[in-house]
Each structure stands twice: as C-alpha cells, then as structure tokens.
Length: 318
Image (cartoon, rainbow, N blue to C red; front, top):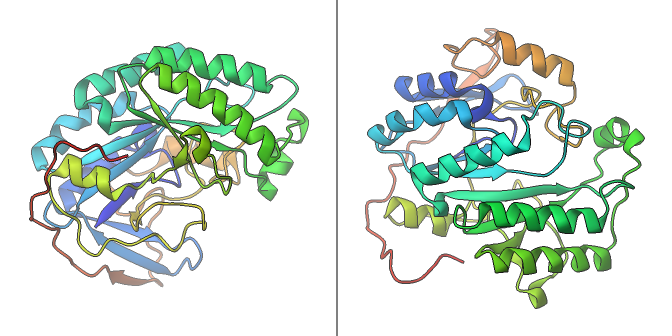
C-alpha cells in the first residue's frame, strides 16, 4: 500500500508531530471528504506500507523526523513544490532563498532521486509573463542542479473557488500552443542542469520536446528506493484521465493547509485552515478532526507489501 501524505494538505510543513504519532500508533483514521460519516482506518505498519509520498512546500520542521522514519524501515520520497512567486500568490510560504536551502538540505540527507521538484502551478498574469517564468525557472533550475533529478510542471486549473479568489490577479489560461512553447523553454533550462522535465495532469502532448507525462505517485521510483517489487499496481482511477499516478491512500484532510496560496484547490477557507493549523490535536487519530460517534469506521484490507527484490541497476526509472 502506497500512502500519499498528502495531496490535500502539507503534512511535513504543519503536521509532522501528528504524523509521527500516527506511525507510533500504527494506524490513522481518514474521513471520506465526500461522505463525512464514512471513516477509513488505514494501517501504517512497516510491513503493510510500501512507501510514503510526501507533498510539501516547506519540510524544514520535518527534517528532524526523518531519522525515526528511517529507523522504522519505511521507504519514502518527497514531491517538493518550489515556485518563484512572492506573497501576492503564496502569503504563507517563507522567503524562497530559505526554501532553496531547505531543498538542498533535504536532498543532502536522502539523495536527489528522492526529492522531486514541482514547479506547480504555472500562473500567467500581466506580471508573471512567459518571459518572467522562463527567467525564473532557469534560475531555480541552476540553483537546484545536482539536488534533484526531475521536475514536474503543471499549468493553473480554473476551479470555481480559484476564479473567485484570484479575480484581482487578472490571470490568463494559455492555449496549447503557448503551453508548449513555454514548456519547451523549461525543458531546455532543466536539461542544461541535469534535470528531466515532466508534465502533471496535462492533456497536451509535449513528447517532441522530450517532455513526458509524469507519475507523481510513481511505482517504478518506489521499487527503486525500496528495493522490492510492488504487487497489483494499477492506475489511480480517482484521478484525472491524464494523471499517470498509481493507486495510493491519502491520509490528509482538505481545508487544513496554512500556506494560504491563492491558487490552492484543496482549501475553501484560508481563515479556517489557519485556525486548524494552530489548534489541532497532534494525538488525534484524524487530522484536524475527531470522531463524532455516528460514523462507520472501516479498516482497510490488510495486504503485506512485496518482499521480492528488484534489480536496481543499471536502468533509470524515467
């Protein structure tokens, strides 16, 4: 079982203590975001978890947790979002020079293969023009050269909540031609710095530029870092058609991320999310939540992970 931690919030940035407590307890409860009275109990024992995939913008406070995760024998990698935006779009994210140092520190601790850079989303406005992005991406790629092996990009999705929140930014949605042109510039800059570029959940075909669709939850990468084959791996049917991720279980909760990013699809109320970040119970089985007593709690089917070793050499996973 692959655990996503998490598409719905930034667990490394805000909930590291809660996460470690869940590992120590050997289980976590997750409320179904569509059916609130349905709760899943997910077992987090080393023999059942193939790997954790951490999604984050700032894992600085999480780095001290890594030795305990390593000691317990879990495999993991990070999807580290690092964009060049300032507080106009990302009011709760620290200054980017500091985040660059955290990225390098994490890479030094666990290796560049296990820290995947996300330049996500690409937001185009009168200020954040294609030329601005070209220069910003090239600068970041140079700063991260040797600290990561691949970068995943995506363009802004026009969700209803985002339309309302970002109306004053006067953002524009590029057509496929503009996407391709900008992505090709990114690929060139990434390649000069030893980084391979991928797209995330984009229908556009950019293979002519050497840009393939990504697998953010990546079975081949997990096999490489864990040294074991995965069993019964299939595409995650709950994600969009163009998403290449394999199935995983997400243990996060919506409306709990404190970064305050205007383009975020996972938060409806930043004010509520900020309060939850400050007041959550790190000992609760549910993230920023407690059982009300009227839920149906179902334990996920226990499946031991594979033990068949995988040949780690000499191929790369992309």
